[in-house]
Length: 90
Image 1 (cartoon, rainbow, N blue to C red):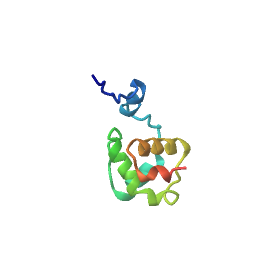
Image 2 (spheres, rainbow, N blue to C red):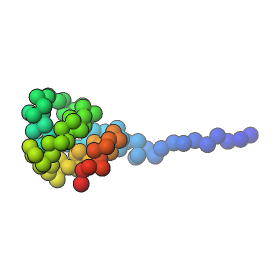
Image 3 (cartoon, one colour):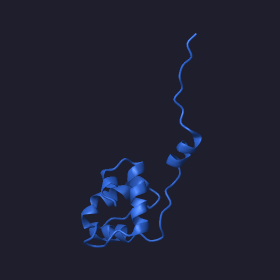
Image 4 (cartoon, rainbow, N blue to C red):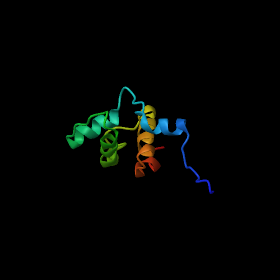
């Protein structure tokens, strides 16, 4: 009999993908983007938050500069949802 190979992921790897990303207390660039685009966003809805960052990325450095903690947050969001913005965040 042939044994089927299983492609299981490690429990710790699967757990990292599912939990919410730790959000900093202040998100000045996101606030500026929301004001400029006249948008509201539920901060618990990570894909929509990322979508706002993508649409308003042109305003980075114009309306507000991306800080260290917000930069880490955006990078984590973009990496999780495989966004082009992950390459833009320093």
